[in-house]
Amino acid sequence: MILFLRIAFIIINAGFSFFHFLSISTWAAIIAVIVSAVVSLGLIIAIEYVSHSFDTRTIVSAILGLVVGLALGHLIMLAVTSIPIAFIERNTAIITSLSYYLTGFSMMMFSAINHDDITVFDAIVPKRKEDDSDKGASYKILDTSVIIDGRIADICDTGFIDGILVIPNFVLNELQMIADSADSIKRNRGRRGLDILNKMQKDHSVVVKISDIDFKDVPDVDAKLVKLAKVMKAKVITNDFNLNKVAEFHGVKVLNINQLSNALKPVVLPGEDMRVLLLKEGKDQNQAIGYLDDGTMVVVENGRKRMNSEVDVTVTSVLQTTAGRMIFGRLKEEA
Image (cartoon, rainbow, N blue to C red; front, side):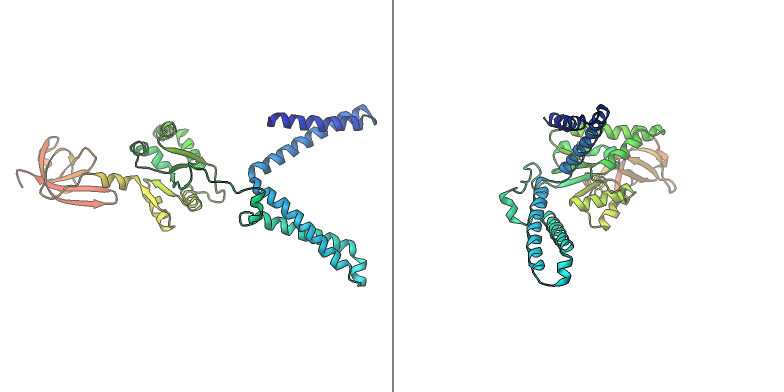
C-alpha cells in the first residue's frame, strides 16, 4: 500500500507538470516531468524520515502548537498595531511578521518538547501504551566477551536470566570484525560468538533485542556500553574484569559471569579429602598442581614426587580471589 502511494504521488505530480509545460514546448514538458519526479522523490524521503523519527503525538502537538501560536501572534499584532504611534504605523509589516514568526515558532517548539505533559492532546492523540512484553521488564546488555564466552546461552536455558537481553549494534560490529580477523584464533572466537547469538535468538525462553543506539563521539566500546546502560537503566552482563570496575565506578550494575561461576563452585572446607590428578609443578619447591572438574586449581605440598598420578589430598586452606578459587592441601598419607 505504501509503495502504491509513493508511485501515485510521483506520477500525479509528474502528470501535472507535463500538461502545464506542454503548452510551452515538448522538451520543457519532459524536463518538467524529470524535475517533478526528483522533487517528489525528495519529498517522499523527507516525509518518511520525519514519520520514522518522530511519533504521531509529537508531530500533531507541534502542528497544534503552531496553530495556537499563530492565533496568539494575530492577537498581539492587532493589539500592537492599534496603538497610534508613528513608529508602529511605519513598521506595521515588520511587526506583523515578527509577531507571527516568534509566537508561532515558540508555541510549536514548546508543544513538541512538552507533548507528554500537555493533557489536552490526549483527546486527539492518546499516549502510546507500553508494550505488555516490555512492561516492567529489566534490560541486560551483553558485551562482546560474554557472547564469545558462550556460557550466557546455557545460563539462559536454565531460566535464571529474566528480562530482555540487549545486543548493541556496536557490539555486533566488533564481533563481526573479530570473526573477519586474519588471526585464526580470533576468527574462531568471533564465529563462536555469532553462533551463540543465533542459538539465543532461536531460544523462545529468552527475549533478545538489537539496539541501534550508538554514541559516535565515544570511540571505546566499553565506554559506549556504560553510557548505553545509563540511558536504558540497564545492567551489563560481562566477564571482563576491567569493564566490571569501570561500570561500577559509573554506578552501573554489573552481572559478572566469572563471579557467578565461582559462587556456584562446591564449598570446600579444611580437613576434607579429595582425589586430584597432579599435572604440573608448582612455584615453590616440591609443590605440584592439579585441577578439579570445575577448573579449580589445587596446590599440593610435597606432591612433585607424585607427578602425573592421581593422589588423595587433604585440604589445608582455601583462598578466594577475584580470578577464582585456589585450594591448598597436602598428601593424605602425610597429613
